[in-house]
Image 1 (tube, rainbow, N blue to C red):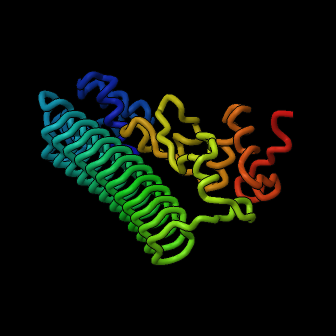
Image 2 (image 1 turned 120 degrees about the horizontal axis):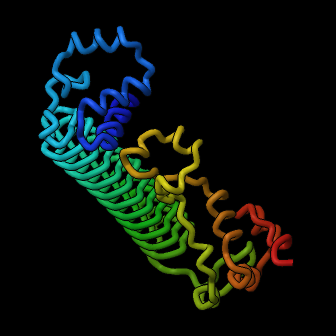
Length: 284
């Protein structure tokens, strides 16, 4: 895959001129004149670039096979700039994608690192929703599996923000519930759910566990760890729970952090344990 990426970039820089691209490749790889002569003798057609059955320069600089799109190093692509195979979308390093910028396989959505997603920004598999780290969700931002609602950490919920399973209600930590409770625990103390629902909560509490990092924003280390960035234009960064929580709160405004402090039964030690953020050390 590294040599394919090199060839793709060389072709792009050379604007489709195969001979110039080959010269760049030889220079980067430090090939000696004797080695270059041997390669040319073995493959006298300059458009081959060492890949069998490749298209000519007139075929828009594909180094793969049976491509109808442009600038592909993989095979059987109808889209452009793919290093994977059988893609109809663009900038995919995975296979069988109809969407764009996927490193996984068989995605119709965009920027997925998982498999068979029709939604976008999923690191899990078989999701039709968005930004799921779990599998087979039709809702959004679920870390659990088989949810049709949003922001569930449990499984098989049709409601929202459930940590339990098989619930059609919301905010349940139990199982097979259809009715919402009137009293909930907030910071381990009783609170009327109606009070909790009406309280103003800051946006920083609703964070994502994934973020698409564009190539222009990537560090050298990130580029080394995600070599497909040159094809996809970036990569999908994954955060663990506390890392994402901490990042969201520390980057928020003082006004948003004050809204956290104003939540019912607020307890700084409990918030620190859950989020990783010590609010007593901020905004002093």
